[in-house]
Image (cartoon, rainbow, N blue to C red; front, side):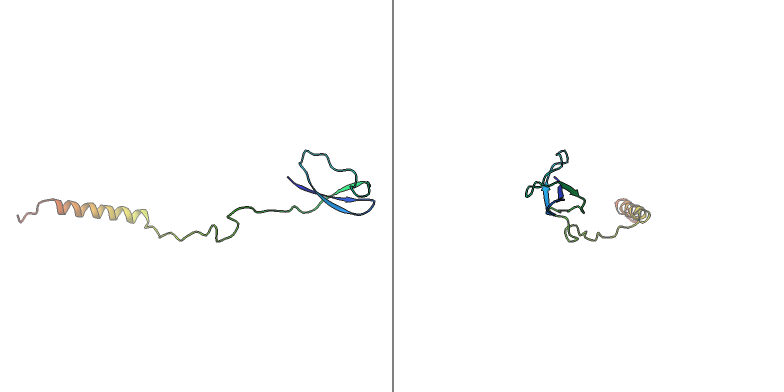
Length: 92
């Protein structure tokens, strides 16, 4: 729920009230019963929970991957070596 700030036009006191957006604005000062005016102020931000510091989401460096073109040729080399080792040699 937002916090609204009001200022009394009669006594000058300032008060903050936690209200729903659907609630009607206050009209009378609780101290002197004078008229109130809603004051526009910067919003207050509250960060709750984890994840608001750089250390909470620090990413570890991942090992660099080989480009896809090189990995395909490496696979082809491995399969070629397997074929050579599994086929009977001519000298036997």
